[in-house]
Picture 1 (cartoon, rainbow, N blue to C red):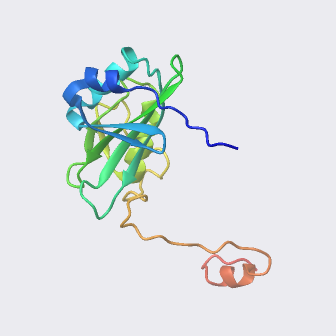
Picture 2 (tube, helix red, strand yellow; picture 1 turned 90 degrees about the horizontal axis):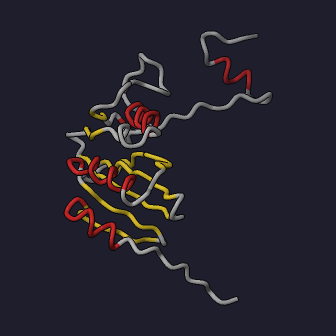
Picture 3 (tube, rainbow, N blue to C red; picture 1 turned 90 degrees about the vertical axis):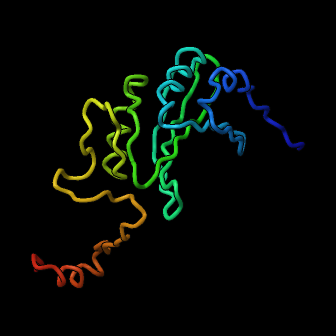
Length: 174
């Protein structure tokens, strides 16, 4: 069976329209990523939603590149339902300045996604309507998905090891 090549949509018009808001275009594994700055992020997302017809923010996440600098990347996964296209937008942030404008005004679906990033990575979204923890308890200190947070493992209790695990706990059952 011959290999089939899937042709990438032409993003050159979008990149040209965005001008210097796009500092880098990366094509890897059949996917296009536009890299922008935090200062031009909202302008780029607004253009992509309104003019380029990327109507849907499917996901927004954070990547921790510790110990590299810039340490964090905020990644926006966009879909154009009307054009059947996907696009990724990426913004890099320093470990020393983890603030970025909120995309909630452009895409409503950014609300809870940004709360999750704030909760787990400590990135602050300026202009977010309700930036507070969403997964961790209110009194939890720190951000558990930062790479310098040690990974801890709690042994799962089964019938064969229940007594040994419970013996180490002050509230052990008999």
